[in-house]
Structure formats: C-alpha cells, structure tokens
Length: 170
Image (cartoon, rainbow, N blue to C red):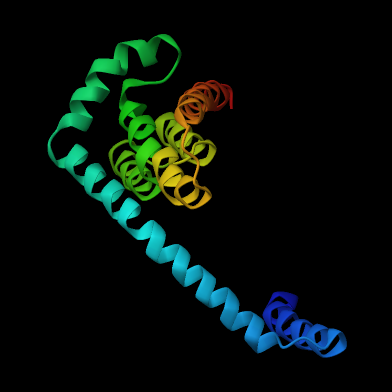
C-alpha cells in the first residue's frame, strides 16, 4: 500500500474530526455547498452550451482551417510552425478541442517529433479563454471584459511563441 491510498480517507476523517471539535454540522455544510454549486451549474450551462456549439460549427464549417491557413505566415514569422496554428486557435475556445488536435499531431508526426513537443508545450501553457469567460465572468457579473479577452489572447500567443522557441532548443 502506498501513502496515496490513504489520502482521501485521512481527508474525510480530518473533516469529521474538525466538525466535531468546532461543533459544526459537516453534513449540512456539504449539502449547502452542493446546492450552491448546483445553482452555479444552472446559471453557467447555457453559456457553456453556446460555446461548445460555436466550436463545433467553427470546426465543421472549415472556418478553422481557413483561419489557420490565413494566419500561418504571420505565426511562421514569430516561430510557430504552420502545423500548430490550428492548435493555437482551437485552444482559445476549447481545451478538449485542443487535446483532440494535439492527438492528431501525434498521429501524423509522431510523439517524439518537434511538432508534438511544441504542441504539448502550447497546450500546457495556454487556456481556453472563451470557456473561462463563460464560466467565471457570468457568475461574477462582470460587464466590461473586453480588455481581459485581448490580454488573455495576447498571453496565449506569447506563450505559444515561447513554447516553440524553448522546445526548439531542447
């Protein structure tokens, strides 16, 4: 047996001991937390569905390929290979879509290739910006998030550039 096998039971026992010592009802706190998270899911769900539908339309329509082809020369100038442009774009919208794109890179170029290593670094250093906006900004009632989008997109692009440069050296 590993120590990691005991982490969850120790955590549960610690919560029970803490609730007994502080005389708080752990079960009611758990139910309150579950109820609050349920409300969060109901509030966020329409926005998440809209983003997933938009991503699917973006991919199926061929617009993703057209955008990747259009920006490839610019990305190539800053060190991002043409084959990874789609990953950089799709990762802005969907983490799972980015992983699926990365899996395609693995199958096409091999897992030990430069493109695979750079793709892994890009997937690891970027965020699904529009998903995060849908989940977090909706619940915080933020109305002016235009600069947040621009800064986050710039950070993702800079992260992709740095990831490609570092994996080129390693």
